[in-house]
Image 1 (cartoon, rainbow, N blue to C red):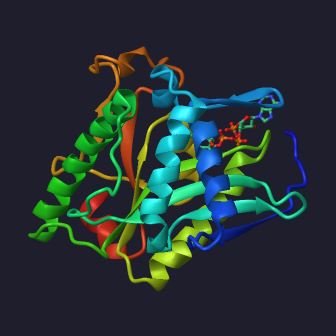
Image 2 (spheres, rainbow, N blue to C red):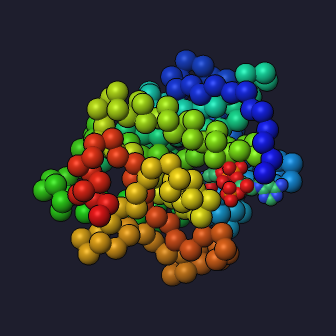
Length: 244
Ligand SMILES: CC(C)(COP(=O)(O)OP(=O)(O)OC[C@H]1O[C@@H](n2cnc3c(N)ncnc32)[C@H](O)[C@@H]1OP(=O)(O)O)[C@@H](O)C(=O)NCCC(=O)NCCS
């Protein structure tokens, strides 16, 4: 096991530091489109199968982070020696009536978000059935994107960012944090750090398989089989209602 001394701090983005916003957008663009760091290539499999370039992703991540940064839930890990953004988590106060302030023209990015949106819809239907009303703003935080660009210990950097996001969730009174975990690596990370798989009314995981999809069936089976809706609770009642 390689252990590298990483000297970094995690910060909440507030939009007043354009360099950090740029760094976060670039980090997510690279780690989704694919970036080689040392011996390893880091990428997100849906973005990879769609052959999205760093530039395609950069346009999206820049607009997206600007759109949600004032929710105070986007976090970066910054190298103390170089000031480089090593990791980023783009998270939003999930608001069913939020309209994005920008248009996504890239068809592949729209395909990805429509796939993830269908998974979210399954989740919201279950939340509605369990709690007897529709999901509202200020209840759930959506962790939309996570990426770490270090050769080793990415989970360690991500764990530190997650901890800061969860502090924000608790401070702001959210019920839970949810993510669409698109691949085995992210699912493993979530398993290790206190996430549960959301369950439907029959107790089956809320998930969408890739094998049935016209594009995503190309994702190699050793990289990912399905996208899972995973929850890290702030309130314990959420676990009882949605994860067992
Ligand atoms: C999600 C993410 C943060 C998880 O980190 P990770 O990939 O598990 O990275 P780590 O550096 O912690 O671990 C890499 C693995 O390589 C292993 N490794 C390290 N050095 C190695 C070496 N020299 N040779 C072989 N394996 C090695 C580690 O032991 C580890 O294995 P493990 O998972 O069994 O512990 C990261 O994959 C990422 O940024 N992905 C890009 C975007 C993405 O998919 N985001 C999630 C969308 S939902």
